Length: 277
Image (cartoon, rainbow, N blue to C red):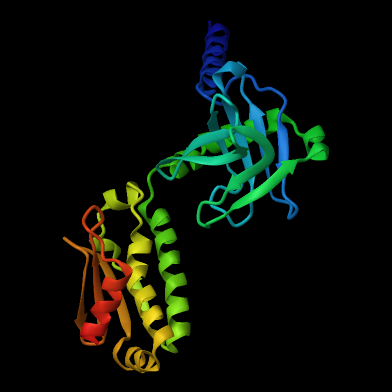
């Protein structure tokens, strides 16, 4: 009796172990994959999931420095097979594609960089493709699925997306300070910015950069403007408001943005500073 009971426990344990294997996209049979690589060594391995007519793929990114480096994500391809879309950081993103020209394929493949304004161009790497094991890519995917890596990466992340807007503001600030010979600081007050503006893809960074671009233009045109900015402006604080507007608080420019309402054009931004500095 004890022996039978022990065997029953073993069988039950084995059954539970088998049942823990995940199911769903990315867990079924895989086909032979292809590796695309760049001159710098960056690459993406594209592994088709069967059946092929479902247009599902596992993409393994090896792009050091980017957010999805080292991740294996399930992608859905468009009907023509030129665009591959996945869920990442709370958005549906086209992370890999083949450029089209007049609706024709070009053989120019690109990996999207999430926090940069360009793409990484790659080509089919025959040598690495020959040694690629699709099962290894899937095994890594299953590990990342099990340990929560993919769930964390797929969740909406306001802080992640705000970094891109911060970068845009920092780029504009650097150009402005160079033109004006100033040491102005600038920041977006993120506590004032509703999540929806970021999630909807509103150009928060670009809107916040517009007053810096106006100051840069004024400094390019006038030495007096350069001296004025140096003397009177120490900081720009950009925040969400009810309308696009600016005001001065001592040596700080408080700039309000309101995506969806009428924006301030280049001339209006420049006029604000000419009237208030």
